[in-house]
Structure formats: C-alpha cells, structure tokens
Image 1: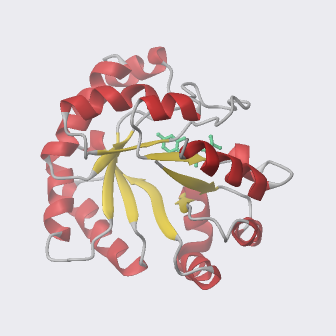
Image 2: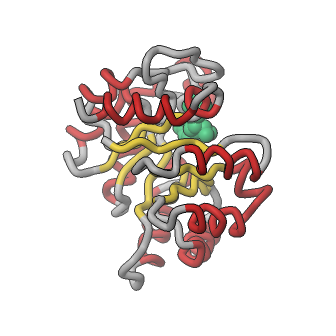
Length: 229
Ligand code: C5P
C-alpha cells in the first residue's frame, strides 16, 4: 500500500513548504483542483525540482464529452505526471475514448475513475444517482475495468467488492482516510489504515491529518510504518 499526500494548502508556497518537510519519504503527491487551477504546470515543475523521484497524481476528475476528455487526457501527457483521474459517470464511451487516445504512448500515466465521492452519504448519493453507493460504485468500477482503465478512486469500504468484481490487480485508491481515527471534517465515509489494509487498498490519500499537523513529517513517518505492518 502506498501513501499519497494531498496538497490542498491555500498557496503554492505553503504546498512547497510541506513537500520540503516530507521530501525524504517515498510518497506520492496529489495535486488537486485548487492547486492546479491556481498554480498550473509551474507547480508540477517546482515539485520535481525538490525531488524528481516524487510521483504525482493529478486529481482533476475529468468529466465532459468523450472527445473533450480524450483531448484533455492527451494534454495531461505533457505535464509529466504519473497518474490522473476521470469520473466514471462520464460514461463508458468517454473512458474508452481516453484510453484509446493514450494507447500510442508507452509512458502513459495510470488512469483511475472516480466511483462515488467519499463526501457523499447514501441519501445524497441516491438523490443524485438514483441508486445506493454500493451498487453504483460496483457498476462504475466494472465500467472502468471494461474500458481499460487501471483502477478506481473509491472508499475503503468498496475496495474489496470492487476487486472481487474486476481483478486483484485493478487499483483502488481511497481518500477519506483518517489514519489513526482523526477528525473526519467533511468526509462521510472515513476509514483507518487497518480498514484499508483489510480491503487490500493500493493507495491511501491523506490530506488534513498531515498538513494540519504541527509536524507533518512525523505523521508521514508514522503512517508509512503502519502501512508495512
Ligand atoms: O483532507 P482529506 O484527507 O479529507 O483530503 C482528501 C483529498 O482527497 C482531498 O483533496 C479531496 O479532494 C480528495 N478526494 C476525496 N474523495 C474523492 C476523490 C478525491 O476526498 N472521491
């Protein structure tokens, strides 16, 4: 299991400061909407300057018509990131189109599909999608697998079911992790590292419990120790 640190701080300087504090650890870094809209590719370049070994997950959750999504995916190729994501609810055609467009590249990033945002509770999710999270997340995962994606973003509670429906090697990446039971914030379906372990999760994403801690490096170290136990 790998740790992916969410870079969700208010300024690029604060994000870079956080990265400098944790640069000695083998973690992935998640560049989300806020950071990418504000700081763009120069932010990615600055991260690589601190340590070119950092793996970067561009969490932009693409959702659009198939051709626009494929165009965006091809543009992402120029950024030098190692993973990005799309919404599974954009549909099988859009996901297939994205993968087809990336086929000629032998160094393409991993592509994941978002199933259900971890901030949804069942009631709100059913209001939007007309089905329970569990049913719909399974269906979205199957769609993504059939479209040739590498995995999904889901909650730790859906990971085991998704792997059994698709494949053990189909990646699950789970946000909403509160490694040692910290405050959930706006996340509805939070899980600890133990839950993630049991569900065979491949990547955990942790934001606030790291960047709001007085000593982020200590928290990262504690998490990495727990991940190999
Ligand atoms: O601070 P926290 O650990 O809750 O951060 C979780 C991160 O994962 C945030 O950047 C959030 O946007 C992202 N995320 C999520 N749920 C998803 C996909 C991404 O919380 N389904």
